[in-house]
Image (cartoon, rainbow, N blue to C red):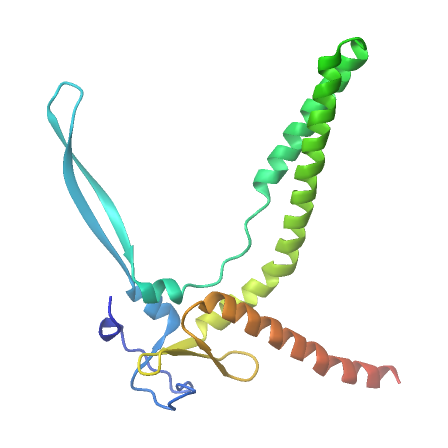
Length: 203
């Protein structure tokens, strides 16, 4: 979908921070929604007895602009490493029981060492991913809030970011990562502004 087909949504409180005009301004969520189109594809396949069987399916097309303006996403959950860690730990325990009951058997000891190594590796990945989710999760939530208050200018091709903090402009390409950086900068600025006031209260 081209820029000319984007819906016009103006804000009385927001302008393009580059050209200072409103006539080509559209909210980023509206631009992303307008960039998604769904179509139905119909055809036929050969059935079990040689007859043609009609089939249909839905196809979702996403424009390049909608992909560029997509909202930030939270880091992936640690479900996979957690499953691997739990399964390898159980298998290591089972091999330990077998090895204790038959100390002469080398296969159980090898299995014990192998699954302990798998459990250690998956446990490290699990812990790293959980830390990333804990750190990046709230930051991504703030970035999504900025995404909802961002405006795309069809004339300039830039995004004006509003919300808490000083308004700023970022490039339309790679908007999600840019909004995470803006959210991180604003969080650091809030931390710097809080420290002097809290220090004054202590004194």
